[in-house]
Image (cartoon, rainbow, N blue to C red; front, side, top):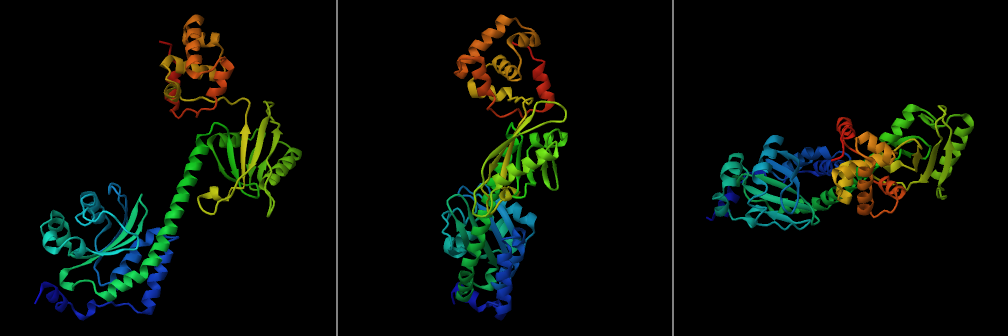
Amino acid sequence: MTEHDRERSGRSSNQRLMINKDGYDHLLSAIYDLVIAPTDWPIVLRLLAEALNSHHASSVITTPERDAPRPLGAVGITAEDHRAFLRTWHKDNVFGTRQPAREAGAIVLGRAILPKPTLLRTAMYRQYLAPRGIQEIVRLDILSDGWHSQSIALARPWASGPFTSDELAFARALMPHLQRVATLHAHIEGTTAIARTAIDALEGAQAPLLLLDANGRVIHANAEANRLLHEADGLSAGRDGLRAATPALSARLRGVLVRAAGSSGTPGVSGALHLRRQSGKPDLVLVAIPARPRSFGLDIGRASVVVQITDPLARATPDPAILADAFDLTPSEAILATDLLCGLSVGEVATRRRRSVATVRSHLASLLAKTGTARQSDLVRLLSRLPPTTRPLADREKIDRVSFI
């Protein structure tokens, strides 16, 4: 009798595919629940392991280089045990390294990748798989797009016998459902990442920016916009949306926002408005721009209007390190550029930095040459388009005390 025959004869009767229609419907429902509850992978893995007579199941998203595995869940071992396996063995996994190319929809038996005698000689088998009874293995390759892949591994002891044709057919029947859910979730994750990147871009903008829904309510405000709204000097926000300094201005503001939001079948139209400030400071200028809504993503997906506010008193302050990198400036030239952007004259810079006007003019001439600008006004216009500083306040205060070299 061959080893394969002995394994078959040693299989007990309860090792056959054991799932009825109710069980199948329950498993299918759990799979589709993953779209809105991706943390429920352990539930799906448990049900799948029970249906395929396996005591172990796990799912991982990884890269072709196998250097950034992301565990989705595991049963038969603890979550920490699974993470420990990924840290120690994933990159050099004896199965993954021998068949690194993944084909979406493929169902691969471990014994087809690595014969049993060869597996027995590996350190991964002796130190990790054997003590946990992970011997008879099947891998379900759900997704593979060149950037990452997702698979499910199921395992049981050799004494339980190879996976049967019925079990493999069952796995093939589930594959389209698993792929559909994984593809949809990958799309949601990707779109969410784009939304988060857009939010980061809003936060990095120098101008106050707001995202409004179709009713004019604030969905998101970057730090500069939050500062203005908190001051409530010419513009504030409430449950009913943005408000200006007077009822008449608020009515005009609502009109601008309604036109920008548009309506069903009618595209939005950009508009602008001067907003008087109660403090007597120069007026704010508000520009409302129609936004194209997205189906997925964070709250940014509900945005109908992008509002940009110009405060004449606000001055951008780029990080001197960014200026130095962008134009190959010396530290002194970068600090001069920052001072000029803050509105200081050459004479005021000389006084602040305790240097002669001639020295400052020399640095200015070099600064103009390196930035390709001919006049100081052109230089300030160029610098004002760069991102603001991200340095802590204490670091910026240190820069303020620096003298030219």
